Amino acid sequence: MAFSSYIRYSFRDAFRSVARHKGIAFASVLTIAISLFILGATLLLVVNSQYLVSTMESEVEIIVFLKTDLERQDSLALQNKIEKIPGFHSLEFIPKEEGLAMLEDRFGKDTDLVKALGGINPLPDAYRVKATGSDKVSFIVAEIEQFSEVESVRYGKELVDKLLAFTTWVRNVGLAVIIGMLLAGLFLITTTIRLTVFTRKKEINIMKYVGAANWFIRIPFFLEGMLIGLLGALLAGLVIYLGYDALISYVIKSVPFVPVVSDHEVLYRILTLLIVGGTAIGALGSVIAVRKYLKV
Amino acid sequence: MIQFFNVTKKYDNGTLGLDNISVSIDKGEFVFLVGPSGAGKSTFTRLLIREALPTKGQIMVDGKSIVRMKQREIPHLRRKIGFIFQDFRLLQDRTVYENVAFALEVMGTPVSEVKRRVPSVLELVGIGDKYDCFPEELSGGEQQRVAIARAIVNNPSLLIADEPTGNLDPDTSLEIMKIINNVNKRGTTIVMATHDSDIVNRMRKRVIVLNKGTIVRDDVKGGYNYGL
Image: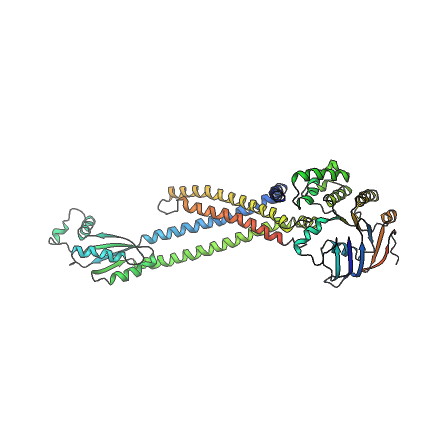
């Protein structure tokens, strides 16, 4: 069967060509590996800085003081209303008794605060609310302030504003860096593949004279590009995988308060992206490069 | 086998490669194309393998127009035609065996048949012992033998040779010509462009003399004489 022979020849030619041009193949694999490593490392850096920012954001607290004369059941009823506000993350109810206990803690056990206040707890019930992000805080505050049960709302306005500016900055810069690295990597890889094809320009030409159809020339190059892309991506992936694990355990040990993305889910997703992307770019790049020399 | 009808080839830079030539070559013929540089010999052979299209006129190979031929039919045309170049044009990253096998592989020939046919054709051109060498390890004469083996391994009906002895010394040239002559005796039509007057005079075949893109002479048993 001609068809099975063609498949056989294509695979054989692809592997043979890598074996016969070891130097060039090695250089291409290395270039692709370095480009993908830089891209992968950048991705991880951006992912981690986003994570850091979002951790900081989730620390922002809104304290809601209710009116002092409110019945307990009315205080508790407010919870439903707060939970319905968009951007709401979590809340904690602080009954006035607990508020007093916290105050007593601060002043020290020896002062009998309740007695000093004449046996009446002057504190209101309160809520401690967290938003999903710092950009949601001011909206939530405005909503809560409209409830009649609410006396006053307190939050770190300045901190929120600064954090908001910082978060936006980190997101934009992260995106810009990723796009830049992606383009640079793409350019580097396609240029490398183009060069490996270019060195065999004459060979492609001769094949055409001997009567090879375009696809017969193209398929081995496609497979070869795929193989080189895959090898480069695997190399980059391996280095990233081992390097990231080592780096994370070092960070956790030496600066434990810095939040890092330590679950492997994100890492695996990035590695998959690199391997699929590298293989695809290698294969496509080489087919596109060959096309230029097929017109004989 | 080959018919040129009023073929003119004008290149983009204005050079006239061929100027309204008509010629017919029969099956099994051996034809020399001679003439000074720039006479149109290379244009003639380039048109035959559809490396270029004529500006005007019609070219038939095996009763089929190669001017109207579609792009994807070109590989099929080239498989029917063996081609030998002055600079051999072997695949440098493949061995002698692989170079010859390639001409069969482009047609999807099964491995078993490739294994059977390649050694016998290498034997035929006298380099059966070099099948594992790379082209750069061979002499010019040996490389040209490989090129001939590649050109004839799929039994083409037409063999085109463009200055096949141009890079070879006289003794080697004679050996190459012996091989080409044997190919002709097996029934293959030969069209050979050459500058080698010695060979043309010795072989006494049909000689077409080109000059400035036109045929100035067409002798059935000619010699190398421009007759200008």
